[in-house]
Image 1 (cartoon, rainbow, N blue to C red):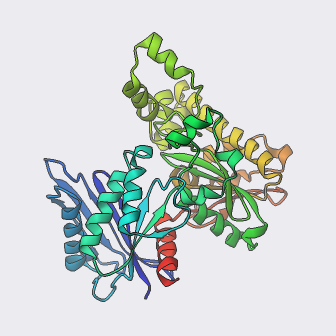
Image 2 (image 1 turned 90 degrees about the horizontal axis):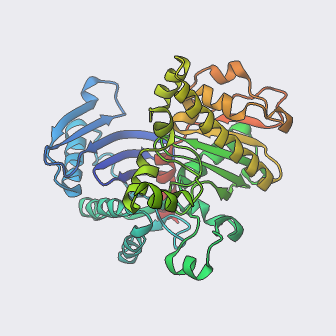
Image 3 (image 1 turned 135 degrees about the vertical axis):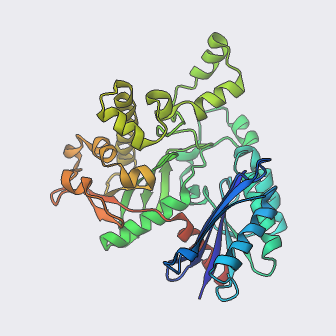
Length: 402
């Protein structure tokens, strides 16, 4: 079997999956939380090869650092399964958030690659340092197999300069690496290919808009399997309205809040990243709670939904213009896959552009890829579950087998 261990290392968490990459089968999943917490951490592990209750393990654990988290993970495999001796990984694939303009494909991790990931940390201060800690801990735990970095930003390196360039002084932009990088690239890549497979058409001939809607949200225009435009920018703050992030905002609001409301840089950062989005507008960061509140007559929640879907519709129109033709609009991630009302409101009124959502099909729940547009719709509207871990596993395997 071509087994890959996929690692997603956060500042205080370690998510992992053991995946048979060629067949797409998940063998095990796990999450270790509160790494470095003085009060201790918590771990969950699931052997996906069995339905027995013995295949699940959960406990409070001591995890002072990422190396300790890997020890917990290895103990979970040994005690609960599946066996890492029987299912020995041929490689370890790591999610790395920011690859800047240096990395445009999955890359075998060397000392030089780690130096580059560290140098790019100012562009993703909450992510790259944690990703690097996970890499170093994983290399100690699995020293005899290749480790591969799969960058969230890599898929968007095909954007043309007109799409990734900001209209500021170019010397300042070049010195400080200010440009659009985009994120969720692994998801956009996986979903666009899965959508093409569902439609039974070569991805090279398709133009589509992928809407990754979760607590973080981004839109991507994909032409022939290549990203040509995306909504997130130099950071994951730009673009669509999100759970706690504002998305697009007049940049002059920032100095205005500094001068008139006494905000400093940290205060503005906290406001736009943690106290805005649907939380700031409607009082709920979870879309399920927001929809429920709106349906109960909460006007603030309803306005938050209207702003959220209005922004999506604006991006759909803009990307249709950039693509020149749209063959498919694809919803994915937690909100995109499950919030029928969001999908309905986001594409409502676009019948004149060839987009017709089948209301009943949209409301039906399903676990796989499905079409929610009418037979008369010129544009296929799809719901396609994302699987970033499988995409990381497949890209990792491609690198080590090349």
